[in-house]
Length: 95
Image 1 (cartoon, rainbow, N blue to C red):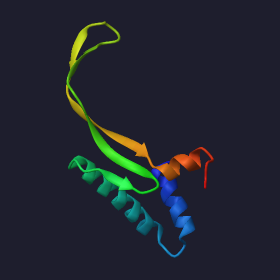
Image 2: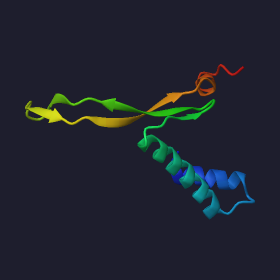
Image 3: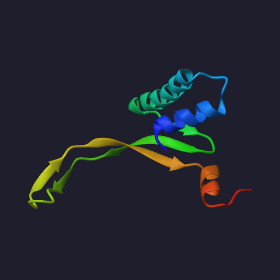
């Protein structure tokens, strides 16, 4: 599902809201999650999952074409861990 499909589906389920309002809501939610991760916070949505940031240390990698060693800079990557309810629904273990 793409972001535009999500917005359209939410608008279809909430006919009392304008499409532009639903788009604003979705964008605001994504922006808030992004801002929290950028500032180093963890975002937990109970039953769905948790977003966090993991740090990767600098390392020596290899260029796959040439086999040459290259220095890979340290970086931060987003990480998502599913919540218990989401895992149960995915595996058909609904209680």
